[in-house]
Image 1 (spheres, rainbow, N blue to C red):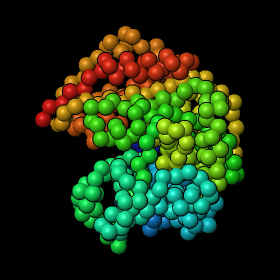
Image 2: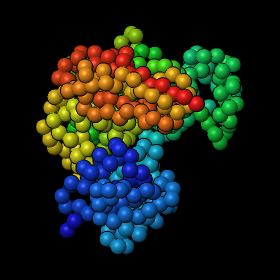
Image 3: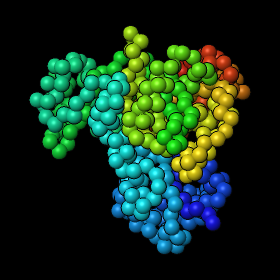
Length: 406
């Protein structure tokens, strides 16, 4: 008898659909959906049935949608989804129906950065000094302890979004006032980690990380956020077996254990300081963004999308998993404001790098400029040689120009 699996996919984004298409290929399941906006075209046939919600972040609405599906199809065996902002709600739905999978306390530990850092530090893992601030006085006390610069971020933020670097007491006071920090609206303050920034991804099954991957951020995310002229890149080197990564492999595995994850995928941002020491920035309980999932799909001999689905639906891991290529993404953005007015250099990139381009999303003429450091488009390249990929990323950044007009 087929198992009923609910995949919560609010919107048919490109990355969500890659994971959803892989789920539809798993044998022995009836794939049901909970969506705000249903997929269209061929993707509209992936779900056997789907229930609609107005607010995908409302646990009550999700429970009601799953109830409707259960009334029609019988007992629900799994509830899954890839979006970070929904992991707590998905866990609450599982608890409501008694469905196996990540529990709410684990999801909250990953989602709330203060709780996350507390659990990691308690396990003896290196994290930035941090504090949950509820007043300007607490902010001043923390700043005197760690010095400037320091970082402010929402306790449940994602990545470097809504992250601010403070360089003085004046900036700190302005931010505390602007964010309306108070007893019921705290903000997380952290020591500013300086050094090279990386990420560490895992797929975990039955408490054991079965696959890990490492990527390099070029430059650090916060530098890209603060400097709109920077065209940010992300690189997956082909060989990650060397001793230079042994420390973070150990830290990453211990972090998963400390936070209590038993199945699924993690995305951990980490720093290597100038003295060589390592520190965890933060860790999320979901497939990575910033095209890292896409790049992993191009780097390995097996499907990362299938592997995640097998981990969260079937609690198993299989495959050859040879890292055949180094892969990199150059994100496309330019200076200025308004709508995308033009893009130059694409023909030259096609001439120079065409066979090495895996996929690309070019800026849409007329679209408003993105406020993300990931820009308005991207080009993904791969090669068996990591140094070749680095040179290709530099060529893209030096050649492609995006222009805007009000």
